[in-house]
View: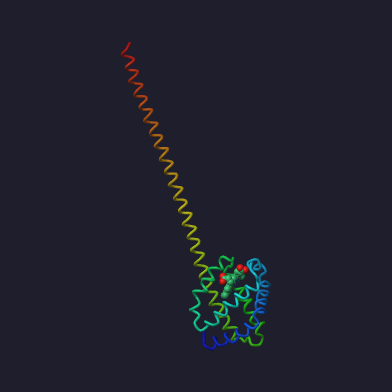
Length: 195
Ligand code: HEM
């Protein structure tokens, strides 16, 4: 971000902080109007949720001149969002709701230049969150695949054990029959010598 973009973002955010509760309610109203199916994803108290969102934005704004520093924290946020049921497509909707909220909250202050700066912030954050979510989902898929493979190997070994046991029983029975037949032949021969 350019120093001018950083300074514009900071100025605008100090206005938004004064309107915190309003900004949060405008944001969620816009978001649920854009996509009502997002409503059930939010289980907690919306005022508290709005406060958390502003807090994260505050941290991001404070670090706007070195966004790379907040990326690890933001990646953690992206990973947690998988658990909230958030998908990649949702980031586009949230971005749209956020920009529309800034426009409404800041009024004439929200120039094209400011829109561009905020869009850059949002895109940077959401790209980091989406990427972390992808890595997390991939790791989960690999873990499930390994678990399935381990279960299948376990099953194959169990079958092989069972087959070996059956084979051993078969061999014991066969040898018992051979032994019994041999004894019978000798017995028959012996009985024949008695007559
Ligand atoms: C740059 C983008 C975003 C930021 C900075 C952000 C920020 C936050 C923060 C700080 C929390 C509090 C919980 C936590 O720290 O884990 C949270 C929760 C949540 N966010 Fe986001 N978020 C973003 C994008 C999204 C998107 C795209 C969605 C999709 C609808 C979303 C839906 C949610 C939901 C459902 C929760 C949990 C709410 C609850 O438990 O009631 N967020 N978000």
